[in-house]
Length: 244
Image 1: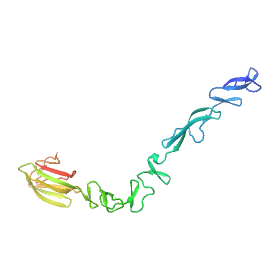
Image 2: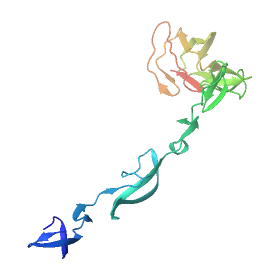
Image 3: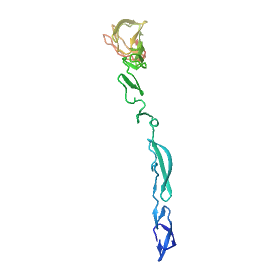
């Protein structure tokens, strides 16, 4: 007569059936006997364990079963700990995790943080990296510059002007940064000179009509302006201008 009771035995107290007093002796699956009643199992995780699986910021260190006070077990409990800074791909800074590229506590005056290390600030213009321990000696320059005596100087390109038209004879004005040069270019002759790759290059042709020209092999179209034509372009170590 008891809910969830599977069997009773004749005793002085317990289940009641047919006017006879019985004592409970068994409960259905999922229940256990508490006094003279059947109660559902209640499962929980022991101390140091959690019911959910470990999160992405944790590391699993073990598992155990969920337990009922009656001794029954069901399900899984997880033991987890927080990931260390190293396990997160970071580094420790006084108990906190920071990116490996950061400097813990910052850097003193005159120093900058470089990939997690405080290095002396580089005072060389256009310098990407100074020699370790020096602020006035460049080791690696920015793109377009080269190290010369620990300083960064504009890299040099080579300008080549060639003429493929036997009737073409021109005066070329070449401007590279603050430098200027006048040259005569004609069929059969090739002009070659170093120019700064960090300065705007301008070439103006006079006293001729150029039907077409190419720069580093790329056709640029016609140029028929009466006083010549001009363009700006240095994108490689060699700049070849071919006139037709």
